[in-house]
Length: 519
Image (cartoon, rainbow, N blue to C red; front, side):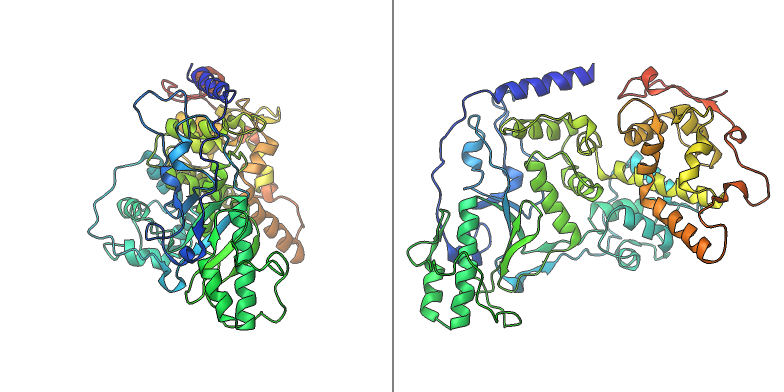
């Protein structure tokens, strides 16, 4: 029933797209090139935080206001790209992000955010998914994550800090490890991802992008030629339309800059400032042009900005790190609000309507927080750890767990497999795992599903097999046939338990599933 309601909601949103689109406010809003040296809100360009953008939604109750999402604060929209004042008034064709700008108004003011010691910070609310992830990562079951276990956590979070740095600020009792409470506080303080202040990612209109690129080239030429008068003219030129203004130099504004500029002393894109700019293809594509001593952002900040703009672009295919970045920023908003916002934005575009439930984006609409994603990643690590202890390669484990040999794993077979590996998981968690692994949503795990799920660790087995072959061993042969203690492992060696299958409990709920029963 819940799935039918979601489909009806999506159909209502799509019907709204057939309405006449408003053409209000399509005139470009010019802004001076010199504004690139000023932060947003302090006389800078006509940019605003993406977090206050709300699309028109015909289904939204009257008087409820525009629906917004807590997108990263360093992601901005130009009013020439998406006007926040007009967007929520009536149906309006939205532009995709074709070119984005990574922008530092003053490179000297760009600082990496530092997290202070967390010993006195309040303990965030308990989270079942985080507790489950913690238990899976806690290899020695001492209720603490030591440095090696913490490194697995950092890899799962795509963190840009190392274990010693996290322990320095989060290890309140100076034990050299983190307990669950300390981990909760560290995650709440974003201690695993250090973003820079004073840096922004901006969605530009194509006209603005063209004008900014002309500014970069003309500023570069002025610097090489030492023409101070031209530099002053650049600072007063206006952007927002398709060209800089009357002082634009068309001779090389859209072509290659003069040779010999590599290795020169860098100056700001606006004369007399330290403003730095890079134009990027799409939300997070390759660099088109850069000037002013620009340097790339950290991996986490870049992923967060790119994921947010791709989410606005109504894209479906996201890498795991982008899904994690989206969940980090959208965690304060309910899943229903995320879906409603995204559907409302997509209804304002002309593009094929794919079923989002069959794409990686589905996790953004079904997982309450990044902790759920962390739980899944921790489960992969825990399964692989237990397989290696038993000398079973990932590729062989599927056949080992397939009790009836029919080429798919049922929920009962996966539950039994986990239990045989010493992983105590309730049926509801197994059902959630099957949904996340099962690519075609038929309620079963095929061999391809299994290998795709274990892909992050399967490479380790491949490397081990190559090392074995190089050492004169049996090459790629699986060690399944010779476990420590002798004897051949087989599917029949696993005690089988029966739990409800997904088609018995529904595609989205496992309430009342009951306990597992021996076969």
